[in-house]
Image (cartoon, rainbow over the protein chains, first blue to last red):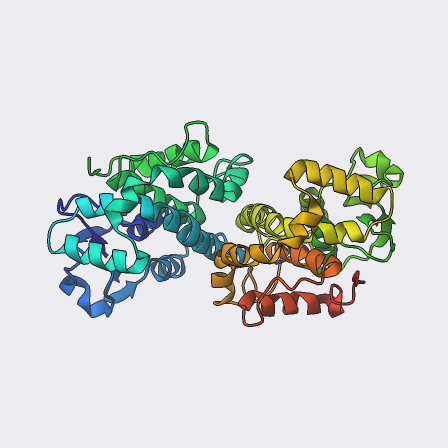
Amino acid sequence: MRLYELCGADRDLRFSPFVWRVLLALAHKGIEVERVPCRFLEKDAFAPSGSKTVPVLEDDGTWVADSWKIVRHLEDRYPDRPSLFGGAAGRALTRFVTHWADRIVLAGLFPMIAADVCDCLDEPDRSYFRSSREKRLGQDLYALREERESRLAPFRAALAPMRAQLAEQPFLCGDAPAHADYAVAGCFIWCRGVSPLEVLELDDPIHAWRERMLDLFDGLARKAKRAY
Amino acid sequence: MRLYELCGADRDLRFSPFVWRVLLALAHKGIEVERVPCRFLEKDAFAPSGSKTVPVLEDDGTWVADSWKIVRHLEDRYPDRPSLFGGAAGRALTRFVTHWADRIVLAGLFPMIAADVCDCLDEPDRSYFRSSREKRLGQDLYALREERESRLAPFRAALAPMRAQLAEQPFLCGDAPAHADYAVAGCFIWCRGVSPLEVLELDDPIHAWRERMLDLFDGLARKAKRAY
């Protein structure tokens, strides 16, 4: 099994939040994978998938792109391994948490750390990333970085539902982590990998949860290369 | 089994979002219940529960207060009836959705419709409600109503994770509704019961979902008395 991942100028820097979701899901299932680093504009290796973005999984001749599709593939193809969803209801609600992670956590972090992502890239990736993201946001990524401290308080406030959940139990999924945890953790691992900005306060239950996520699977995410 | 509910000046007006969560959960389980209306300041009937607020359930001598505790009680005590959570993972993630509903949906609706709630109450409930809620919000409820139109756009934007979910499947819980749907629906049924304000746009997938929720259980929520 082969996983095509995003990397920076330094090929050991693997920062994509979507790839991290898949890496944690694979570790949860106990599945070994060959990790293939690709820069933003290196798409030839996974061209057979038809996808223009990673993560892409090549599983015994089957190509699967998109982190949610990959995770569903893993759950359906390897049902005897530990479950990522805990059944049909868990799968549906994990999807809700993934949408929440995309629209609240990832979208909240992005303007704060996008310039840091830029700094991790070499040309031509840097120009591609900066122009495409500035077009999407309608703002200069480096100007956004200048004012990012002002975004911390509203970002933290928007995490209130997650904070309430983690005040009651160690993981979003209960006593043990599963894919809903990984979907959110991917965002924080991405942030930690590319940016020196600490986005969580020390006494936030989400901070303690993030520490637990970094420790999982023999410190898989904690050991990952960081940009600074 | 007896459920103590909140009611307005008109005792047939049952508007509590937390009670609605329980009513839908009871219907999902196919459990008949005697519904006992209580105004805000009528707490004697459920005093044995030790709770100062409804919903309170009296189940064959067992008193349970708090909507989340009641729903867990129903799931655990009646495991042979249709499941509200779909297993342990579903239960944990349903709790996350409930926190999201409380902090995003209910908290977003409240300043827009709190004065409408006031208008449904008789003295002494009205004075109690107005002063306690104005203290909590630090604002005049009727002044909030005057400017409520300005809150509609950010409220709708905050529903993005739910909208994304419902663009893919008919219910938050997948092909059929379960408690995560009821947890959110309670907020919208409350709003519809006390306020003439339409908070959702007609072409919003959440609007269509709300229609489906109103239709459930032979139109249980649709047939409920409204204030205007």
